[in-house]
Image (cartoon, rainbow, N blue to C red; front, side, top):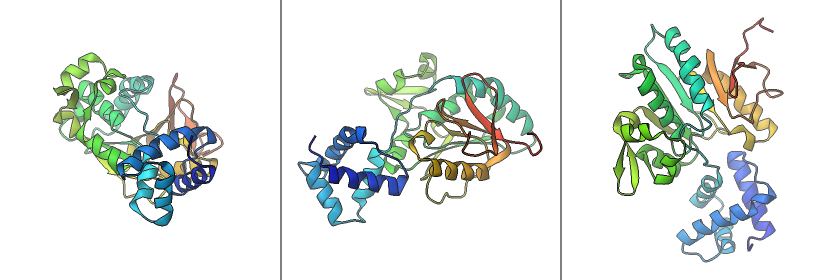
Length: 277
């Protein structure tokens, strides 16, 4: 590895300051690999030269590009499957019934990366909830990376992407082949609105959400940041709404206002009802 310890610590401090993500020492190789890709885009031959350019211009666009490049963008269609089964079998039927007299249902996929999660929700709704067609559901996907959001808006995925979690039946029904890639059809693509949002900064005005998916995100933050984000989530989540976290995540010892919904293999939470224990 050619990335010096001083340069690694500089990058770690930058990423933590702007995104609250914590880069451990074992991530040094990943950091160097991604920095080298950015360096070559700038016409530079080494990560040392790239970091030197960053240091020379502390508020340049390069800094944000580094933060975005080092954010974790791991995702897939219908990731972990069980949350989507819970949505289909229990949560969405309940919410559709409760909101029967209202205009629509609001769903927010936070830190959505390249869009597979919100598009999976859109396909699930299209398949199983005709009552939410014709503009009666609003799905928002957000991420801190402008570049990754642009990819999400395009809805174009390589063969590897569609091989991960997407049932063949849905691929045939909702995608069209575009060269070596697959393009999601407009009937699904236009169901999702993508917005830039950094979870640790000020949030834009968001519609009160019936469902928030914040899965496999909190694990990258320190304790104080987790508490801060969950407190803000409560301000957006409707009182009878549901929060989905990743399987290895919990609100326990972070925000006592949440209680876990007893569902098998699914990290689903709701705001505790006053007087409910």
